[in-house]
Image: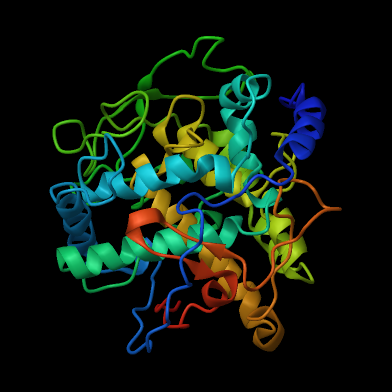
Length: 376
């Protein structure tokens, strides 16, 4: 049908063999102790962007811009400000939360197939909870450093997707992606990708250039971190968003019986032929050339946090169906796709470098654990 990943079987078999025993988390040789939980009082409630008043939306955008004017503290080279910090830690940890590879034969292949890297994420058991931690840490920075008083908003793209009209552009004409000064802006000018930029021949892109309107135009916002610093880019690809963000895909994820099945279904397998909700936001908005479609540097688009906020909300909704079990259950492989090997456990730790210390998956299962403090 569309865009099968040639070489996927080769890459998978090689990566499973080559990554066995490779430490997943960067940092000190001896891990830090997991964070001591605090008491969660008055957790902020996260809202869908369109549930927020105009003043709340303005306050959020202003806080994001504040991060771009606040000095970096991550210690990562080329991260200039606090917004960059979160993109940079995602980029630095991509080999650990995505593919874990270290030899010359495989790395050029994996670096070339950005789509393959992005869609491998939940083929590790800690992917969704690591991203929960990242978004919550970003939310804390907005609140504690930039005076934002609300919760991190999310974008429920299932409200906008039209699976019956895959080429419809209506999903990109909402208040989320609107042209206003306090919206996230729309598409970029059309730029045809080169074959080298589009090794999987993803078709249907309608942009690729700098975002033309909204809060994050080139005169107001710059992507500093990554291989191609400059303007924020978008490449709306309607068939991806309309099929991958289908409400039926969300329900399929919510119907899973256990954590490991949930984690696999949120992304399925690395091919455009298997619609999945994680890919919808990344490639529906980012396409081939857009910032959010880049595996390592997707947090360079402020919309990343609304997209992953919604994925986190789906996880929260799934947990609410059976909290006694699902606040105490993880699963999935430590090594990508090694389903016969070592699985993550409740005491498996992840971290965000200088942005946030070690946290166990058990601590990250509960959005009001004290390590985390928010609700939906």
